[in-house]
Length: 127
Image 1 (tube, rainbow, N blue to C red):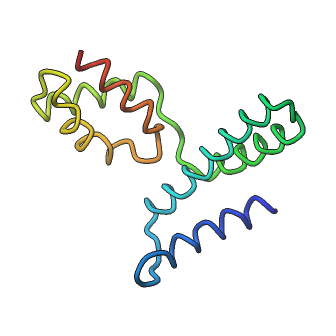
Image 2: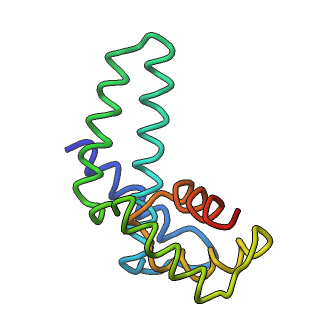
């Protein structure tokens, strides 16, 4: 229950940040949840390295709860296919076109693949 309260608080904080309060779209909520899941993963790793297995386990459990509310993650094959399609759509021929490819690809994978994984796949495909 504490994890759900934390998520609701993170969403509310995002809604009231900025110049005026607003209601988040579904994709913005997914972005907030993805950010919170990433925080839990990084915290679990840090606690494990620091010898705090109890806290690491707690952070992993919270991350698992958050993951239940996120869209299903893409497989490597699905991501590779979308990368290839986006490269063709952008007409990219080398690493200098990575920004153009990412601009096309990012909305297609929003919430279904980690940004670092997407960037690495694009970089590898453009070499």
